[in-house]
Image (cartoon, rainbow, N blue to C red; front, side, top):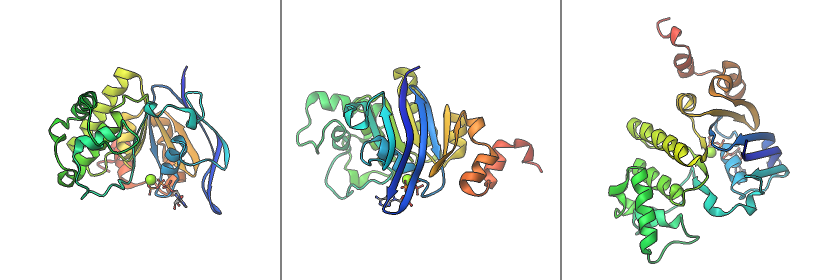
Length: 251
Ligand SMILES: Nc1ncnc2c1ncn2[C@@H]1O[C@H](COP(=O)(O)OP(=O)(O)OP(=O)(O)O)[C@@H](O)[C@H]1O
Ligand SMILES: [Mg+2]
């Protein structure tokens, strides 16, 4: 089986603070992994490590058998948690998508870039957004444009940091459908951070429960146990009890 991601004993320190502690993990190619854990659990830090932006203080990382810094950038699509872009910047949605194909902001968009960007926007059902100024996009629309930006080079690994933020319920359901379709079609691996346990349960092939350490990793029904959730979050939420124990609904 091909490996998309391998971490061996990865620890990350910020000054004296340990954000990740001896994380070991193997993700087979083609998996759809949902990463869940409380605020400050090191989820975004894990993505930064995979992107090669943070060097672990200990341990080793491989993506498709290579160290992150040797992975061709077009192999990875990334949707960041925080969009640092100034939205009043006078730019169009299509330029943001094309910026995913270049290392810098595009001056003039080439015909083939436009074609790829429009295809990526169509994939996220954002055809109509191409010529819209960023300032006029709703929060959910901006998320779609970022997703198109991540998909534009048809990456084999998608790293998504809370991609559903700001999307309405239908938009969210749509997003999971398109992620699953993309994965089926290309065999890509998806790693998605989410606070939505139910989405993790229904859409992921594997769930990583993280709280600085790996608390659980496996098929959703084996990772999303009360025991793992209690260890990660300190309690089991009401919603979780409802979602995974339907017999309690009337009780
Ligand atoms: N560059 C940094 N310098 C110092 N501390 C950092 C840095 N980045 C993250 N941290 C700390 O590391 C911890 C983990 O942060 P991280 O952003 O990975 O959490 P998270 O699981 O993504 O949380 P959230 O659900 O709130 O997004 C936090 O306590 C954070 O304050
Ligand atoms: Mg985060």
